[in-house]
Image (cartoon, rainbow, N blue to C red; front, side, top):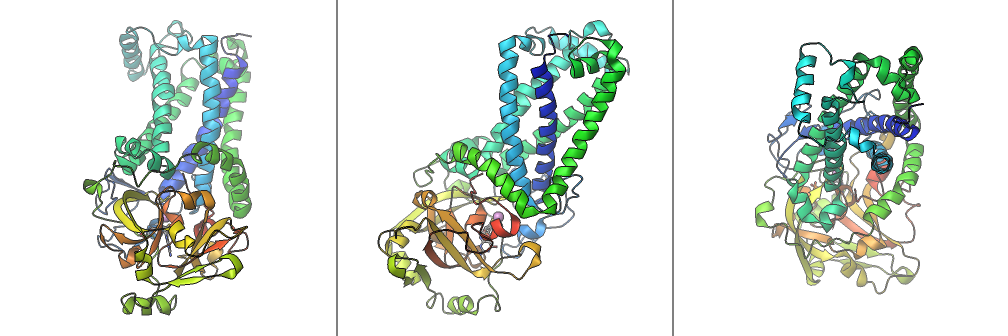
Length: 505
Ligand SMILES: Nc1nc2c(c(=O)[nH]1)N[C@H]1C(S)=C(S)[C@@H](COP(=O)(O)O)O[C@H]1N2
Ligand SMILES: [Mo]
């Protein structure tokens, strides 16, 4: 056995291969839910620099929802495929967590054993040498075997670039897309060019990563495979065992590809089961990684007037006559007859507030970027009353009240399995309610909130993605547990699209 290809190296290499496939496939699933890329934060129609759909977007606000833009990917390509952004995001979360753990093990051992010296170049000579190799490849010849020690200059540059530049940038831009991070470190997101900058760079890195994988796997089989494969499989510099290594490598790749596709069909076979499993294994990482971040939107001066988006996307259209005649009447009365029901107080107490009552409470105003987990974003100045101030009108928090449920006058856009639509709702936990930037907003950009964006009042919870932020709010109420409502996952998008209750990433 050659100690230069120790077991840990071969094992992390294989695990990395499995996980990268999970990450790419779930990433494509997410991209297909809004197959457009922008550099500008408002994600305005027509401003895309790249799109994977022929559909033209109407320029008018509030007529087209991002859910309508979702495309269906084959389960052979996406994880899990077929318009399952919620599960795709969960798989991406699990993939990321394991991939980073595996990466840490790899890097620690790489430096611990000194093996880093053969992949990280330490001399400028690497560039002319790599150039020579490149010229040979372009002429369809290959450098002779003595060039590889065990890697040649071009490999060293390529591996160093992928491991120490592309992978870390992937992690950094991925994190920049999490609302929890944006609300704690708004300048960090600005550094990447905002949400759309981070998203577009993340996409470009994905393309680089994919091209690298295709080249890398091909070249391993084309250039001196009789050395590469026995090293990769057995850790031995033993061309004698080439046939055996070749067979095992090919079989492994085939099994891994089947495994990737199996994960899709396993998820699709019973989506609630897949969600339960994925939540269980990813929630600890969300809690540990993001739970401690207390948003500071109200104090943050990172965003200002110049950041306000001209265009704001919509997800969910205003209630229609059959959804809520009550809301339409209130609208016709210029919100005179509109009431916010505040319920679930001790001894079942409740209140009905008018819009003016709400405006009597201290007004909070801040700039914040809204992100829909499908991928679009938009920045506005939001104004409204703190949710806790509204709840305090009922008196102290009743014993056993662990959550607040917010319900809409409008119905869900669609339900799981196309069953009849139910009122849109979402549930927040105690920690979230206490945060800055959790308000019932009645103003946007210093004007009354627009009808398609939730008039007269919508929820804002800036540390979370948009699906938590109920529009056309009808009621807020203390509840002890959310398992009794809807499908018991704590929100409409959780129920209908199997998204996470914890919308912080
Ligand atoms: N009542 C209601 N509220 C809703 C939705 C909906 O469909 N109905 N969609 C949610 C989602 S997924 C997002 S991203 C935001 C979109 O807010 P906007 O339309 O104001 O941009 O609203 C959230 N609140
Ligand atoms: Mo959304």
